[in-house]
Length: 547
Figure (cartoon, rainbow, N blue to C red):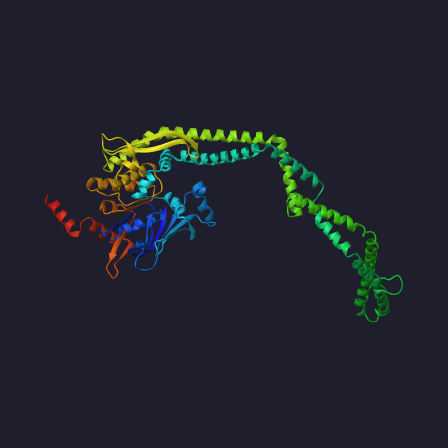
């Protein structure tokens, strides 16, 4: 659904911001007011070529921007992968834009980021179908005709088709994997040997080994400093000869202990000195034990260095940058070896995967083909009936199916053929129907198969009277399940629109065009004008009364 369209300085339109609703949206206005500028704006988003003549007088550039809703899975198609990579996180819609510069160059944008014009047009074309040259291009595309037939078949067919697209992708991946393995069978043996070597080389290694060795190495490298510092501290607390801090604390406690009875406030100090003497003695003992233990460790430094060097050698050998990555790679190697032990020869396993994927593709393609053949005639009959109500009563419509090479959409090619007049041969729709007839064919297809947002610029060309009412009824029925935008001069169509916009030319220097949404009062005035004006309507009313 097209939610919003912004137009800036495009031909006569200085600035317009239009919000479209679901259902039928009509654009009307006097002849020459600039209704075609609306179609031109959408055409730019669909990839239409243009030049500097499209730029209005209000600035040096022209700009068109649209905000479109996206259906689920829209970016699953490979052709849209370029845009999918640019999609901002959390963005649910597509913001498409096109800018025209003063030298005639143009630039396309998706979510404000520059993209190729063809990529943007390919995405918008899947969301918006427009009459005219775009209709002819779209109806000539075999993939679009297949889309219409599958939509007519129903939701189960569309789900099956999406599943086939995934299965086809899986088949391609399985084939590539098998080809890689089969191309060099010795590579498999080399791979397994490398995995075994990695597992064996890291046997018994645990995540904390490297950190522990580095800590011990640092300690041994500073052994002399540790020994001197710890020895000094131990002697200061409890020397073998003389008085240390522990003994001094004991002496201080004994000096004040006799006076605790006559000076109770000394009791707290005496208690702290007793505790301090005990703690200092314990710390001194710990330091003596630490110093004694250091004497046995200097020779271990060489062994630690060798062990750490072996870790570094393994990291270089197996192409990793850290000890942790080495262990992670070893764990992955164990898992791969376990799988290979269960699965057997990798080439044979890959071949079985290809066969299974091929079988799934064929199963889905056959189901798609059966449903298409079951519904082709019904689609042709339904379109023919719609065409008859739209003033092409003599026209005949045919859906032709033929087999083609298997692909992501199955093994069927579809061709829509039309015979506007009896006696003539059937021909491809895009080559046989005139401009006005193409629009009616597109309307008939949409009416029976649904689809994207539809924009009609020539739907009422050469239409009047009863046919005008039929066209209006078809558009109204279509608008119940799809968004429709139509540029029209027929009051029969405008009167049934859910949202009504008017294009008006504003005199001035220079003259410009305004596009506005109409409220109920302005809409009645516009419908009255389209019907011939108040005087003409009054005349018709008088004639009817006389009759």
